[in-house]
Image (cartoon, rainbow, N blue to C red; front, side, top):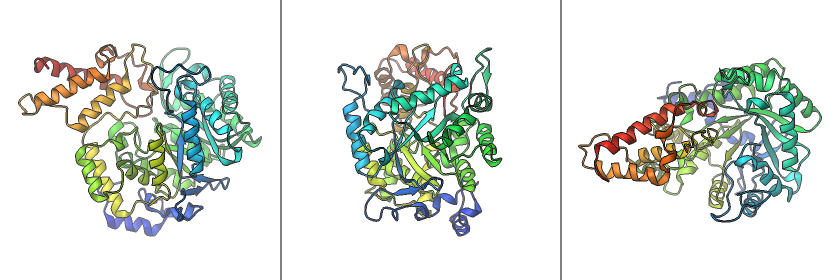
Length: 476
């Protein structure tokens, strides 16, 4: 769809409603069609109705991927390790008290302790007051057998202290991997087939759903679009019924995911495919790993000029929550202030208007022009076998781009200041032994990246740039 789509076309798509399935139209559809509380007119959390079960689900979902940690120097807990269970409990209590009832976790989050911490926090509340979402995160090819994946599911029930899962996902379908016998690289389509279909796992999960141990069965997708197409084809043919699908959706990925990542598909396409099948969408990365909350000063000024009272992050959350087919929008809220702000944004949601949509497409074009590395700091690439801190390297590089500290010409009057900011900041944020110069391009990281980043190539580019600055400018 043309990124310069006119307002006239948006109005035309609106007139056709969601039945027209025009990409870009559904995001402007009225949310009232799926809200159980009239868009939270009383100041309460906006809720969405799951058409498969009738569940009234909070538009804000709590992502348990970036849990608060104990203060530095505090002894780790024997049960929950470095994670601050007391603070986790407080934040879960606050979320539930303010209408948030969807909690998303995984066996691999937070060093493998997220499910345990989530289970401890939620067990203190009535089981019918919340929905648990977790995943079959059998990324390691040693776990591709049916037996290993079954054991992962059983362990999730144990860690979460429950006898059923409300929303179970096949995790990160479309991600690549390696053949367990030959070590050869496999496409995301091949891995999806082996992890979930050929081993009989999805058939077994359907049986568990029939037995009441799973209430909703779905999948999350990143990477190889052929895997997305395969799973929807199986849905269309009636082999598996997907009750929901988790996709990445934000105002930058709406049109620019393909340009940013090359092999990714724009969110407008993903959402459109779900919308025309009536499959509810669960949204991940509404802030693109925090990137849409940390825009540069010029873009922040534009957003503030349009609405001085709105936070930068709230624009992204409103965009992600506006489509009528969205069931919930996940946010990994490490700090209480993030939780409080997001609750305010969705209590109630004020949907994005046609004019707001056009404005955000303009903002997305500006952000895209900065050419940042599209890293969301998910940590799936870690640990690096050679000790690199990959997310920290990308975070510093992106920060410098946003702040204008990536000088290109030694003749610039601000060159020395920008050069110093880049190099000194690099050494402060990433220890020398963990910087990009130590990458040997082994390639172990890239197959695990949900954003399909060519990580060794990006690290090589950053290292070359840093070395250029070190050579050309003299002492700092």
